[in-house]
Length: 373
Image 1: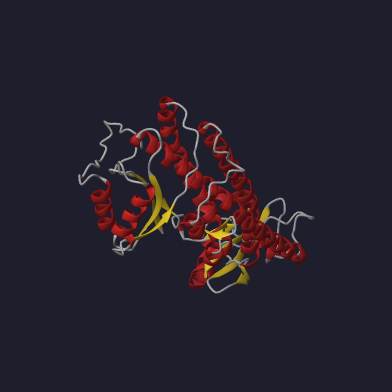
Image 2: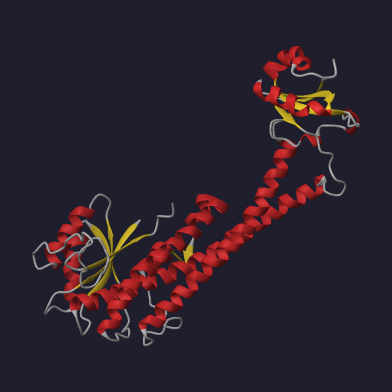
């Protein structure tokens, strides 16, 4: 769902008149839904400081949007669409929070210098990003470990740890002789039996045996002299066989069934903890992100319209397939009847919205609350 945060100015008109005109031209025409956006009396500072802050805010809001989407991706990975749909900000759904936004005066005092306010917001979101990296890494490491164990125990013979199916008495390892194990497609078992003795010299005749089978593969054993191991491996590879050397499990390193089950429970517990943390982190990150967009809207409005601050801020939600008509109506109603917006080719810097690729006759920022890919 896409929202536009806009700041509208009509010289000589009161805020309520601007709001009524916005409602008449957009909501009444079924082009979009509008919500008043109350911006506190933020500390303006100097024009130079606002110009510097404008460029910084563009980068900061992009960073925060990226962190919000990282958290949402992790929620989706851990809990799926149901968990994603249940995300909240300060006890409200994301949509309701945007519609009813109120500046958090306790956390971000309006009379504090804007640069300090933005720095605090940035610090909070950066900490969330750092914590997410650590917590996601811990969960992914556990999940990877469980996946490896599962493949070793339950995967096909092509990927399975053969020490789980080979018995010690099936292995010969003397000064001169060694047992190798070869993964053979079940369709190629007859070819293997006809050819393995001729694949190189010093292969013990009639030494091959079937150790294990699954739906696709057979694990075959063969005894040969150690000095021809490399020759045999090369010949086997040329025929599409996979040679697997047996390594006896080191005592104490094997996971018992109970330990494997405990690891599975640990993964689920870590997954649940990460999902819950992400839900809390999302609320804080999104709140900071929207506060930064509001600061950015305020700064760009001062740079565009001048002092004292005189504009009506609003959240506009375009109706589906009405974006172009809505833009045209806003342009006509709040642009003095002129098509004043332009696209920046990179050679110009506009007053306010520095570095943005598209400008309108009013200040406009885009907020997409669905994006997280």
